Length: 327
Image: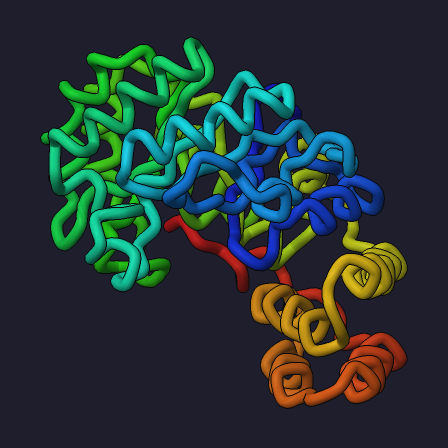
């Protein structure tokens, strides 16, 4: 399948960080671009450099990256966007789709769309500070998949660069089927370029979605790529290539080493690797057994013993149909 469509790495907090993005680009075919995991707005006039570390161009960004903000205070948004501009960015994204209840209940993430006036003010400040470069990531709604359509007139009134739509409600979190009919309605109503997001796990998923929505040329993949790092090349190539064990092992070895240099202590490194394996094991035969071994590791020595054991008697990759997300 030869395609010139645009593929964007979705922001997965704790996983698709700069180190992951850079090493994925080294070992596999990278996406065209990435939206970085969100940076929260905060009270105060100065942004601490540590908050910007993940998107700092001086630290190396192997894939073009768009910083993402989460929050509900317009002036705090302005402060953060100006910090992005000081780093040289002309684009930024607003997270209005995070489904976690402790976030949404505070009117942030997916909860931001519930209050039209607050949502509008955030879009207004974003477009004012990042003219032509501000985008938003949303869900279909909170409990029902109708809120996005209700807000579409408001969304259309701002000069947004694009609108990324995760085709689920916040209540669904990341479970259950994506809701393609409500997505189709939102797509038809939206005047901006729309990015589809949700359950692209195989080249077959992409093909089925492309056949149903031929006008969509921008696709956001998060969990699918964390599960199968080979996914972009398997989608892009006319004939899907084989997944190579040596490349996967090289990537993981480099990821551990780079994380050890970047993070503070082995506990943090182990936590990061567990976050990744929570997705990655789904692409392996006997993956549940592998995951059960990784998640109970208490030290990096234990982690290395488990993972080395996996690659000594590698169980193989599951077939695409076992990962299939779109019916």
